[in-house]
Image (cartoon, rainbow, N blue to C red; front, side, top):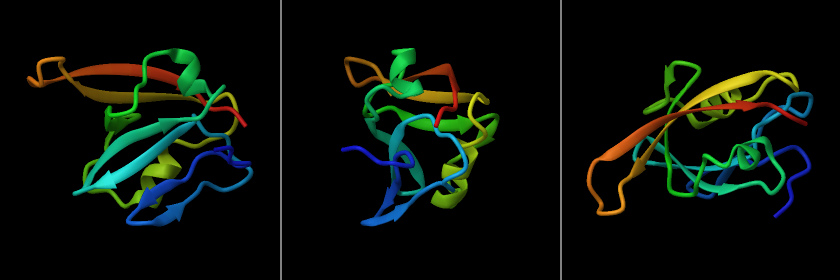
Amino acid sequence: PIWPYGPPLVVRGKLYNKPRQQGGIGLVLEYREKRVFVVGIVKGSAAEETGMVEAGDELVEVDGWKVEGLPPNFIARLMCGPPGMQRSLMLARKGKEGDHAVRQQVLVTTSV
């Protein structure tokens, strides 16, 4: 799908989106039991260009803010900013054997 103003945050069927004047990083997120997961990546987005974000990753932090339990619209706003602003994401990904999650930091620059 193509979203003219970036991907929405989906919570129980309700969409949350960022203000039109701000840039985003291109993640489609789902909020489950107070945790946030990547369910898609916008083609050609800054997140896709890093090659370090995958569907299924858990979003743990944005710029040092722990996102677990934060309202979805607040999380969406944390990932937005003027085009060219760098965002630091902490992601957790389950190992191939289903063992404990490995964390990695990813730097992504917002774009229109």
